[in-house]
Each structure stands twice: as C-alpha cells, then as structure tokens.
Length: 309
Ligand SMILES: Nc1ncnc2c1ncn2[C@@H]1O[C@H](COP(=O)(O)OP(=O)(O)OP(=O)(O)O)[C@@H](O)[C@H]1O
Image (tube, rainbow, N blue to C red; front, side, top):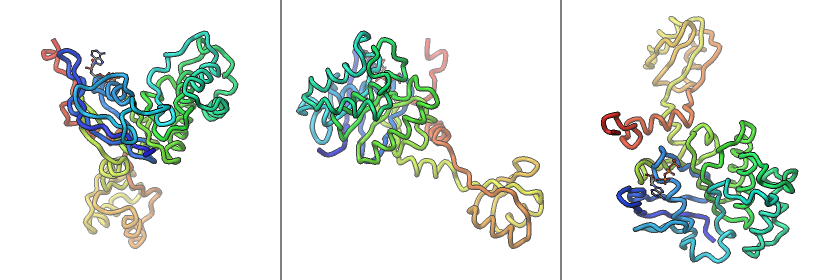
C-alpha cells in the first residue's frame, strides 16, 4: 500500500462551532510531518476524521488512496496513538498488545518485537494502571506498530516524556520515517520536533496556514547572518563593510555580519591578517522559525479581552 495520507477540503461543524474549515494537506512517505497550531485549531478532529472516529461534513481523508473504514486489517495500513490513557488499568502491557494482535489476526510474535522496539520489555508484565504517562505513550506506540504499518498518526506523542524519553522518541520517529513510513505527529512544542520533522503543516482555525519543508523554513528564518568574534572589532568592521557587508556590534568582541557567507568572511579576515576566535553561520531553531512564520497570522493571536467577553 502507498504510504500517504491525503486530506482534502475537510469541513466539520459542532453545532455553531467550526472545527474544520477546508483542511487540506498531504503526509508524504519517508518523513515526519509535524502537525502544529494553537489549541482548538482542529488537529485532533482531523486525526479523528482520518481514523474514521468522526465524520466530516465535507471533503475526504484517504490513507493510501482509501478511506480508513474501507481498509481490511487496518492496523496493517495505519497505526495511531490518540489517547494513551485509554487503557484497561488491570490489564498487563503485554496482554493489552496480545489482545489487539489477536483481534486483528496479526502474528502474536510481533508483540515481543514491538515491546523491544519501544523499550518496554521490563515493564511488559506489569499492570498498565501502574504505568507512568511516558510508559503509556511507549505502549501506545507499540500498539500502533503492531501491524508494521506504512502510515503512523501520533497525537502529541511527546506528552509526558522526560528529557531522555524525548530524545528517544525523536530518534525513534526519525528511524521509522527513514524506513519509508509516512508519519504525522501533532505537537504543541516546536522544540520537541527539532531535528525530527522534515515537513511542517501549520494549522489555525480549522485550516492550513502554512505547509512547508523544515529545511527551507529554517534556512529562510536563519537569513544570511554570520556571528564573528574578534578582538580586532573596528578593523574587522572596516574590512567587511568594504566588501559590501552590513555589520552590527553585538557585544564587546562579537559582530553580526549580513550579506556575506561565512566562508567569505573568513577569507577576508585572513587576507587582512585579522585574528578571530569564531565565525559561524546563524541557524534558527525550529521554534524561532515557527514564531516568525506565525507572527503576523491572525489565527495565532490571543483574543483581545473585550473580544473574549
Ligand atoms: N466533540 C466536540 N464537540 C464540540 N466541539 C468540539 C468537539 N471536538 C472538537 N470541538 C471543537 O472543534 C475545534 C477544534 O478542536 P480540536 O480538538 O480538533 O483542536 P486541536 O487543534 O486538536 O486542539 P488542542 O491543541 O487543544 O488539542 C475546537 O473549537 C473544539 O472546541
């Protein structure tokens, strides 16, 4: 099956509230696609519609070209983590997975494999009622992977993870994407998705506000700024400005240079015999890039107090 999700023109209302207002995007194979936006933007509703847990009023959400409800043995096509709390507390972790595997006629040998992949082997025989949120997230991911599906949909998988768990989850998602899977991950914290997401779908008020590759986004937000540390600040400013750069003073020994690549800055300083202890191209974080992208969008502004009343 083709590893893609295609969401086209989804509209949904809950009474007077518009939850989805023409939501359209694609989740491509081989990448983690981050699905981000403020509270109430429509992320969970979109995921529920993809999974057939909610019906849209209009539009389509296709997994490998088909509606989820038309998939036979859906766990083989799509794995999902929606609510890690939705577990029977008295059931042991391994039994939960065995029950799921049997219900979908999946090989039970896969249960121990996914327990190993998610680092849950030692907790597998404990009752899930005693699991931490992080362990429940891992069990949810293990369940999503039972059918070895080409598509994964994960709603806030970083929630409740400690720093070590976040690092593990990032690497795990990268590895799953490198196997060619299409992965959609919703999150509130851009820092969690740093070095993990290859694509970014930003939503606000039920529709897509930006749909962009992460590398291009970070390159655009990074600009062509270079940080230079030198004890010969004045001379360096004269040389670089003479070569067409715009140079501003950041602090006593640091300059910010725009308009020249880092390699050219190094060459010019060497030619002039000026010492330096650092020349580095500025690289924006994903969080900075996201803030810049959404700065002027009305979808992200908090309502004014009088409008909220
Ligand atoms: N079952 C429901 N009944 C009524 N309104 C709902 C229901 N589910 C969602 N909504 C409304 O639809 C809109 C979209 O909600 P949704 O939960 O999809 O957003 P979200 O982006 O997932 O938010 P969050 O980041 O807080 O999880 C919100 O205005 C929400 O209040």
